[in-house]
Length: 250
Image 1 (cartoon, rainbow, N blue to C red):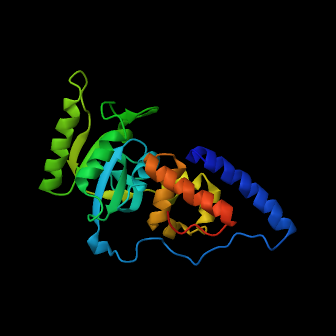
Image 2 (spheres, rainbow, N blue to C red; image 1 turned 180 degrees about the horizontal axis):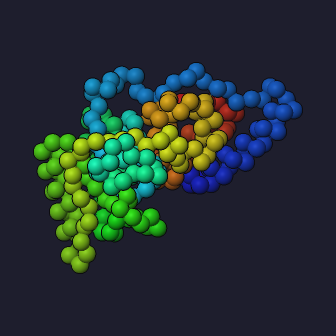
Image 3 (cartoon, rainbow, N blue to C red; image 1 turned 135 degrees about the horizontal axis):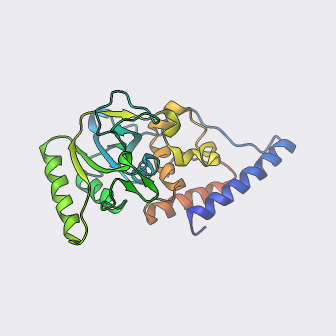
Protein backbone atom coordinates (compact mmCIF):
# COMPACT_ATOMS: atom_id res chain seq x y z
CA UNK A 1 0.00 0.00 0.00
CA UNK A 2 1.14 3.51 -0.69
CA UNK A 3 -0.16 5.06 2.50
CA UNK A 4 -1.03 4.26 6.09
CA UNK A 5 -4.61 5.34 5.47
CA UNK A 6 -5.10 2.72 2.76
CA UNK A 7 -3.45 0.08 4.92
CA UNK A 8 -5.75 0.81 7.83
CA UNK A 9 -8.80 0.49 5.60
CA UNK A 10 -7.49 -2.83 4.29
CA UNK A 11 -6.86 -4.01 7.84
CA UNK A 12 -10.40 -3.21 8.92
CA UNK A 13 -11.75 -5.07 5.92
CA UNK A 14 -9.58 -8.07 6.67
CA UNK A 15 -10.63 -7.97 10.30
CA UNK A 16 -14.25 -8.43 9.27
CA UNK A 17 -13.26 -11.17 6.85
CA UNK A 18 -11.19 -12.98 9.46
CA UNK A 19 -14.07 -12.93 11.92
CA UNK A 20 -16.36 -14.65 9.44
CA UNK A 21 -13.64 -17.21 8.61
CA UNK A 22 -13.05 -17.87 12.32
CA UNK A 23 -16.74 -18.64 12.81
CA UNK A 24 -16.74 -21.34 10.11
CA UNK A 25 -13.29 -22.85 10.51
CA UNK A 26 -11.44 -22.90 13.84
CA UNK A 27 -8.13 -23.48 12.02
CA UNK A 28 -8.10 -19.81 11.11
CA UNK A 29 -7.42 -17.67 14.15
CA UNK A 30 -5.21 -14.79 15.21
CA UNK A 31 -2.34 -15.91 17.41
CA UNK A 32 -1.99 -13.91 20.62
CA UNK A 33 1.54 -13.56 22.03
CA UNK A 34 2.75 -13.76 25.57
CA UNK A 35 2.21 -10.45 27.33
CA UNK A 36 5.10 -8.06 26.74
CA UNK A 37 5.57 -4.33 26.91
CA UNK A 38 7.78 -4.25 23.80
CA UNK A 39 10.26 -2.00 25.58
CA UNK A 40 13.92 -2.62 24.64
CA UNK A 41 15.19 -5.06 27.26
CA UNK A 42 18.70 -3.70 27.39
CA UNK A 43 17.54 -0.24 28.48
CA UNK A 44 16.93 0.59 32.11
CA UNK A 45 14.97 3.59 33.32
CA UNK A 46 18.22 5.04 34.66
CA UNK A 47 19.64 5.27 31.14
CA UNK A 48 16.66 7.21 29.78
CA UNK A 49 16.06 10.94 29.70
CA UNK A 50 12.73 12.73 29.83
CA UNK A 51 11.33 15.68 27.88
CA UNK A 52 7.94 17.35 28.18
CA UNK A 53 6.25 19.52 25.54
CA UNK A 54 2.84 21.10 25.01
CA UNK A 55 1.78 21.63 21.40
CA UNK A 56 -1.98 21.41 21.23
CA UNK A 57 -4.18 18.38 21.88
CA UNK A 58 -2.25 15.70 23.75
CA UNK A 59 -3.89 13.00 21.65
CA UNK A 60 -2.05 14.33 18.62
CA UNK A 61 1.10 15.35 20.54
CA UNK A 62 1.65 11.86 21.90
CA UNK A 63 1.25 10.43 18.40
CA UNK A 64 3.71 12.94 16.91
CA UNK A 65 6.63 11.89 19.12
CA UNK A 66 5.87 8.18 19.40
CA UNK A 67 7.21 7.43 15.94
CA UNK A 68 10.72 8.73 16.49
CA UNK A 69 13.58 6.27 16.75
CA UNK A 70 15.06 6.51 20.22
CA UNK A 71 11.74 7.34 21.87
CA UNK A 72 10.98 4.53 24.32
CA UNK A 73 7.74 5.68 25.96
CA UNK A 74 5.19 8.45 25.58
CA UNK A 75 2.59 9.61 28.09
CA UNK A 76 -0.21 12.13 27.60
CA UNK A 77 -0.73 14.40 30.58
CA UNK A 78 -0.98 17.85 32.12
CA UNK A 79 1.75 20.37 32.98
CA UNK A 80 2.44 24.07 33.29
CA UNK A 81 -0.20 24.99 35.83
CA UNK A 82 -0.76 25.20 39.56
CA UNK A 83 -3.76 22.91 40.08
CA UNK A 84 -3.02 19.77 42.09
CA UNK A 85 -4.12 16.51 40.47
CA UNK A 86 -5.81 17.97 37.38
CA UNK A 87 -8.33 15.96 35.40
CA UNK A 88 -9.48 16.21 31.80
CA UNK A 89 -12.72 17.96 32.76
CA UNK A 90 -11.02 20.02 35.45
CA UNK A 91 -7.44 20.78 34.48
CA UNK A 92 -7.29 24.33 35.81
CA UNK A 93 -4.44 26.33 34.29
CA UNK A 94 -2.48 23.32 32.99
CA UNK A 95 -1.73 22.63 29.32
CA UNK A 96 -2.30 19.32 27.61
CA UNK A 97 1.23 17.91 27.31
CA UNK A 98 3.24 14.87 26.36
CA UNK A 99 6.09 13.30 28.32
CA UNK A 100 8.73 11.59 26.21
CA UNK A 101 11.16 9.06 27.64
CA UNK A 102 14.05 8.65 25.24
CA UNK A 103 17.42 6.98 24.81
CA UNK A 104 20.03 9.79 24.56
CA UNK A 105 22.30 7.47 22.57
CA UNK A 106 19.77 7.51 19.72
CA UNK A 107 18.12 10.91 19.94
CA UNK A 108 18.87 14.07 21.90
CA UNK A 109 16.96 17.05 23.29
CA UNK A 110 18.06 19.30 20.42
CA UNK A 111 16.54 16.88 17.89
CA UNK A 112 13.33 16.67 19.90
CA UNK A 113 13.15 20.46 19.83
CA UNK A 114 13.45 20.45 16.03
CA UNK A 115 10.57 18.01 15.82
CA UNK A 116 8.56 20.09 18.28
CA UNK A 117 8.81 23.20 16.10
CA UNK A 118 8.02 21.36 12.87
CA UNK A 119 4.97 19.57 14.31
CA UNK A 120 2.71 22.53 15.16
CA UNK A 121 2.15 26.23 14.53
CA UNK A 122 3.98 28.09 17.32
CA UNK A 123 2.54 31.40 16.12
CA UNK A 124 -1.06 30.47 16.84
CA UNK A 125 -2.21 32.04 20.11
CA UNK A 126 -3.48 29.55 22.70
CA UNK A 127 -4.49 26.79 20.35
CA UNK A 128 -3.80 24.59 17.40
CA UNK A 129 -6.17 24.38 14.45
CA UNK A 130 -9.74 23.99 15.68
CA UNK A 131 -8.60 23.45 19.29
CA UNK A 132 -8.60 26.88 20.89
CA UNK A 133 -8.04 27.56 24.57
CA UNK A 134 -5.43 27.99 27.25
CA UNK A 135 -5.00 24.22 27.60
CA UNK A 136 -3.72 24.01 24.00
CA UNK A 137 -0.94 26.61 24.32
CA UNK A 138 2.60 25.90 23.11
CA UNK A 139 5.23 25.27 25.80
CA UNK A 140 8.74 23.83 26.03
CA UNK A 141 9.34 22.48 29.52
CA UNK A 142 12.97 22.28 30.61
CA UNK A 143 15.01 20.43 33.20
CA UNK A 144 18.03 22.54 34.10
CA UNK A 145 19.99 25.37 32.54
CA UNK A 146 21.35 23.48 29.53
CA UNK A 147 17.89 22.51 28.29
CA UNK A 148 16.71 26.07 28.94
CA UNK A 149 19.62 27.40 26.85
CA UNK A 150 18.88 25.02 23.99
CA UNK A 151 15.18 25.87 24.13
CA UNK A 152 15.86 29.61 24.03
CA UNK A 153 18.26 29.26 21.10
CA UNK A 154 15.75 27.16 19.17
CA UNK A 155 13.01 29.69 19.88
CA UNK A 156 15.20 32.51 18.53
CA UNK A 157 15.87 30.52 15.36
CA UNK A 158 12.16 29.91 14.91
CA UNK A 159 11.36 33.59 15.40
CA UNK A 160 14.01 34.57 12.86
CA UNK A 161 12.07 32.70 10.15
CA UNK A 162 9.45 35.45 10.13
CA UNK A 163 9.48 38.95 11.61
CA UNK A 164 5.84 39.64 10.70
CA UNK A 165 4.37 37.21 13.22
CA UNK A 166 5.45 36.30 16.73
CA UNK A 167 6.27 32.92 18.20
CA UNK A 168 3.94 32.44 21.16
CA UNK A 169 5.72 29.40 22.59
CA UNK A 170 6.54 29.66 26.28
CA UNK A 171 9.65 28.20 27.93
CA UNK A 172 9.08 26.99 31.48
CA UNK A 173 11.02 25.03 34.05
CA UNK A 174 9.09 21.80 34.56
CA UNK A 175 7.50 21.65 38.00
CA UNK A 176 5.07 18.74 37.84
CA UNK A 177 3.73 16.41 35.18
CA UNK A 178 0.45 14.61 35.81
CA UNK A 179 -0.35 11.62 33.57
CA UNK A 180 -3.77 11.87 31.98
CA UNK A 181 -6.51 9.32 32.54
CA UNK A 182 -6.06 5.90 30.84
CA UNK A 183 -8.64 6.61 28.15
CA UNK A 184 -6.42 9.43 26.82
CA UNK A 185 -3.28 7.29 26.48
CA UNK A 186 -2.47 6.00 22.96
CA UNK A 187 -5.75 7.54 21.84
CA UNK A 188 -5.11 7.33 18.09
CA UNK A 189 -4.06 3.68 18.31
CA UNK A 190 -7.21 2.81 20.26
CA UNK A 191 -9.29 4.09 17.35
CA UNK A 192 -7.99 1.12 15.32
CA UNK A 193 -8.90 -2.06 17.24
CA UNK A 194 -7.26 -4.32 14.67
CA UNK A 195 -3.85 -2.74 15.31
CA UNK A 196 -4.39 -3.43 19.01
CA UNK A 197 -5.25 -7.00 18.11
CA UNK A 198 -2.11 -7.35 16.01
CA UNK A 199 0.06 -6.60 19.06
CA UNK A 200 -1.85 -8.97 21.30
CA UNK A 201 -4.48 -6.76 22.93
CA UNK A 202 -2.15 -5.61 25.68
CA UNK A 203 -3.78 -4.62 28.97
CA UNK A 204 -3.93 -0.89 29.60
CA UNK A 205 -0.94 -0.74 31.96
CA UNK A 206 1.30 -2.49 29.40
CA UNK A 207 -0.07 -0.53 26.45
CA UNK A 208 0.89 2.75 28.14
CA UNK A 209 4.58 1.78 28.47
CA UNK A 210 4.96 -0.12 25.20
CA UNK A 211 7.47 1.24 22.70
CA UNK A 212 5.68 -0.57 19.89
CA UNK A 213 2.34 0.92 20.93
CA UNK A 214 3.91 4.40 20.93
CA UNK A 215 5.07 3.92 17.34
CA UNK A 216 1.77 2.48 16.18
CA UNK A 217 -0.05 5.38 17.85
CA UNK A 218 1.81 7.74 15.51
CA UNK A 219 1.28 5.41 12.57
CA UNK A 220 -2.48 5.23 13.19
CA UNK A 221 -2.64 9.03 13.13
CA UNK A 222 -0.48 9.11 9.96
CA UNK A 223 1.98 11.42 11.75
CA UNK A 224 5.16 9.38 11.43
CA UNK A 225 7.94 10.66 9.18
CA UNK A 226 7.40 9.26 5.71
CA UNK A 227 10.27 6.79 6.01
CA UNK A 228 8.92 5.31 9.24
CA UNK A 229 5.34 5.30 7.96
CA UNK A 230 6.45 3.26 4.93
CA UNK A 231 8.49 0.96 7.15
CA UNK A 232 5.43 0.14 9.24
CA UNK A 233 3.34 -0.21 6.07
CA UNK A 234 5.75 -2.89 4.90
CA UNK A 235 5.59 -4.76 8.22
CA UNK A 236 1.80 -4.83 8.18
CA UNK A 237 1.72 -5.93 4.54
CA UNK A 238 4.11 -8.72 5.48
CA UNK A 239 1.78 -9.82 8.27
CA UNK A 240 -1.15 -9.88 5.84
CA UNK A 241 0.83 -12.00 3.39
CA UNK A 242 2.00 -14.41 6.09
CA UNK A 243 -1.47 -14.95 7.51
CA UNK A 244 -1.76 -13.09 10.78
CA UNK A 245 1.35 -13.65 12.85
CA UNK A 246 1.61 -11.22 15.74
CA UNK A 247 3.32 -7.87 15.25
CA UNK A 248 6.20 -7.67 17.72
CA UNK A 249 8.35 -4.87 16.28
CA UNK A 250 8.52 -2.34 13.47
